[in-house]
Image 1: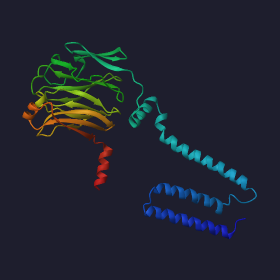
Image 2: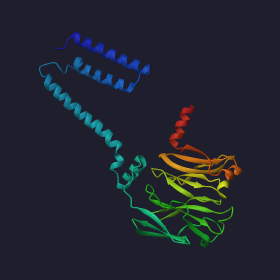
Image 3: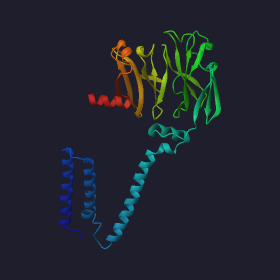
Image 4: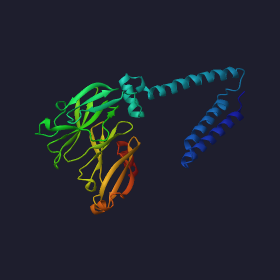
Length: 322
């Protein structure tokens, strides 16, 4: 039978545990969350023993069985509800589920091998292949004009990237470039980066530059959200001002450009992705043009890390400044 002593013992223990939890929080104890959870479990057991008397009385075994059953049902309902709410996207339509998995976890479906095959010599058209089978031929008449006033017959598709099989599984599209043959040797030459969407067969211009440049080394981020590529004017190795451009493929907007310091000549090369929004790049620089001509085999090499500014990064920086 419950006694005044048992009630008093339970009360004192409950007060003690409450005070311990309070001082653990106010004094910023290590692993404070784990401490609070542990104290809560002990407090729960004390309530059951000293106030609900679940271990006392003639039917104490049945009381314990009923209590454990009730607690199990409550846990199943609560934990199950939380799990369902957290995984709702996995139970939507197949397309919604795929988008969720790709964007949040960087996991893609097993895709067919998409590749581009350019027409030899004139580069006036190219084929898009899926596992070696032709699915679409793109000609100059298919692309929107990107150099106002010039006929499309002056255009040519470019295959000087060093890597032309750029397939974006997240947006289900391939990327390719074209330039104006007539102005290719002039300072006002125009090159454009296009995207062909395999879902709706639509071709759009996602980037254009008005300089005599050589696009190259296109690199998709692991989650297919960003595209980094070489972009910049150059007139020979020692006069190179080639830099890197970063595009956001969700909005087709330019996020950043990376160029050499104004007092240096040389090149910038993409190295590797570190994670979904960070990559390493290499600067090969010389003091000046004369130094480059004399010592072109001995550049100053610096490897740097670049983190693409995202909305979450910006918010974190703002919070740190407050």
